[in-house]
Length: 321
Image (cartoon, rainbow, N blue to C red; front, side, top):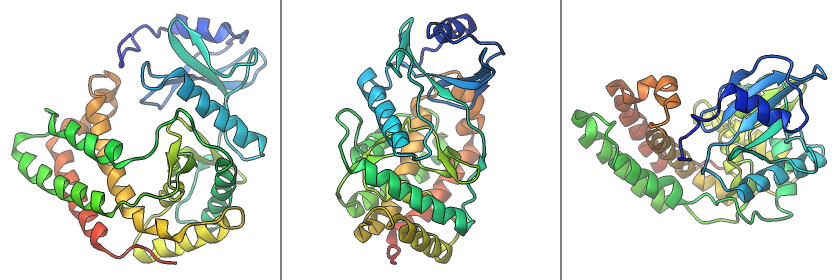
């Protein structure tokens, strides 16, 4: 089975996999937005809504997926609102016809409002609770956020990509190299803890408080990684948001102020990694359908502009509380 091969994941196989755990599907399968994996919502015979998640082959090892599950279940056991996998027959990770899959409860809610300081305060409090638990142990199998994975290798991936228009390559790679070099020089090693890893507003559902979903990218790294993606707006707005986040965070977990200096390097790392991720996954038929603009010259023109803005942000003094 190749890295991109979901071709064998037919509706019949999905149903058979779910029913292998004695869950009877009564509704149709509703495909949910997910690009790395294949995720389906359904109603079972108990009239409850569930989500079945089939993991992309060869992306994570079974040990890495199980560690993600164990972390989610550990957080949920501390009454932290994380959507954890359901356990059947003492297992949360199941294998069917070479596909790893898991079942989750289906949860609803609206999106977290980044400009709502009351919600930002809630987020700081709950991320602090997550990190207080996360510090109690280390990951054995999940990867660690590193400049090699988020800057060096993505740069190489982009340099080998046929998707960047020839007329834009010189401008794009010139500013990209400048951003990578400056981010490499500014990123500082720090104490790593277990993280959600991809704690952006799209992975927060809000209903009487936050619910954290999709720990598929959980890994070790600096605590600030789970906080900086809450920031939005201009520098003054980000200062107020970060001050609010940290004050609430420290009700449960000590915050290392020196990590404020790596917010912009982390932002640059996410930008470069994202472009390389799309390039790497372009062979998957789902990606050209979901991201048709990625092969368009206008997209790359926008990336050149975005990288120039990020290069300027990297040269500014870091946020200070």
